[in-house]
Image 1 (tube, rainbow, N blue to C red):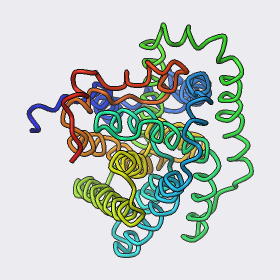
Image 2 (spheres, rainbow, N blue to C red):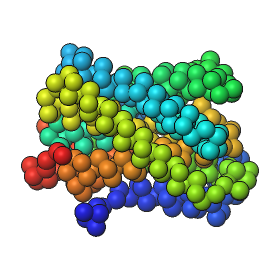
Image 3 (cartoon, rainbow, N blue to C red):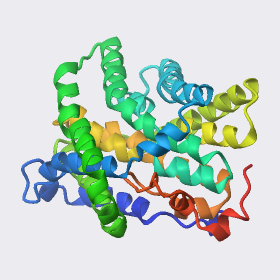
Length: 354
């Protein structure tokens, strides 16, 4: 099975970016010759402007009435995940560095993915409109829920976060560009659709700039010195355990509420996934200037890769991996014929959910 998996080139690019930062951090540090910090900061606004253009209000309204499905997904995304992580951290005690523990809770507080959830749901013959609604609304809720959850967590561990400036910065760099994108959507949607590849490259370039800048700063500050290689294995084990527990509990909830098979697929896929494309820009805003940023974002980077592989296998094999996108993506186009484009038709016809 694994020999047939074709990894998204973006995952490879992430690994190469981290490797470059570890061996040659000077160009990418804050204030360095590449100005990666400025590209990352302003790139956040670009990502959400493009996401605003891509987000279709019509698609959201089509599935808004299925409140019981949406409630389970959002409960899993913003309440179950943090509860499971808190339990794991209590069991771990002081074994994990503080920044990594913060990174695990940050992972738990993030919204679900958009395009990945929809692509996987489509591949497994799940309820695609429900997936579109929940993944999209999750990103909007996350703009406020994620910093609130992080402020609560940091307070409980003796730290703190000045929530007012963080929310204000998120409004300026996330909500405002998203709103402007919605306003100009009728004018620019066809242009963005015609240049979908360029949009995807711009989106991924911003994420790579955030990763490069954060790892360069941490290497320059000596954050990774003295960290045991075992730490990486512990993080991998932690994200695998987190995924397994949440996936299992959400599946049990779907059986309790007697959801249909297509609805269950949409709910489980959306509620068990976390957005790297939303998470890294938000981390850039919330932890800007922290030398520990690379440690904080490591759990979500590893979770992104592992959820891609595991859910890809569950949804139907290697076809799901090739369908993986990072936000923003024109998934919710008003033309009904465009939605199944997330998965090639010849693959979708032969796929089954496990």
